[in-house]
Image (cartoon, rainbow, N blue to C red; front, top):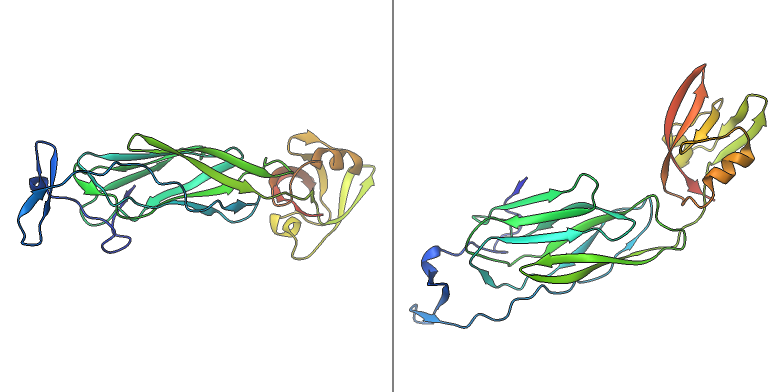
Length: 248
């Protein structure tokens, strides 16, 4: 995709006439160009470490701009920390004549942002938006990967908060035909996921279940807020429900 114009004056493309033999020129107070030494370029560290929860909102990891001139295309490459996936990558540098292309891998494990201009200034923040995955460990923890730009690399770090055991919020009972759903709590994740009274649960996340004990074993260690496929028998047909677990 191509992003243009997010925040006025965040960055500008630099006219090619400002460069001679790879040397950048700046205007003096009188308007005449004069040579200046380029400061060392480096990718600043991220601004803060977000707290993520399974089933919770996506949050940003932000890197501030260095406001330095680049005389060739630039490319940010983000790797998702363990137990997370990248939702989007974005920078306010992409406006006016600075043309940017953002790509997120289908599995969300990596993302790139490319500035296609030869002469441009990185003058706007870069953000990488991440979500915690359903397989995040119950204990949570801090997990890191990398962000690379302009030949330098910084950590990309998130906190995953400790989780709680996920449950089906309703009343289940063993019957001769299997695990019968007698009641589903109104307003619960179980109800909004489509589980209904009268359903007979046949499997959880690919594991066949015939008793409530077997169902509890299949759900053990699964975080509240995580979503798993549940096959139920309903009116003589087998239906798959994407069930988001409630908090215990």
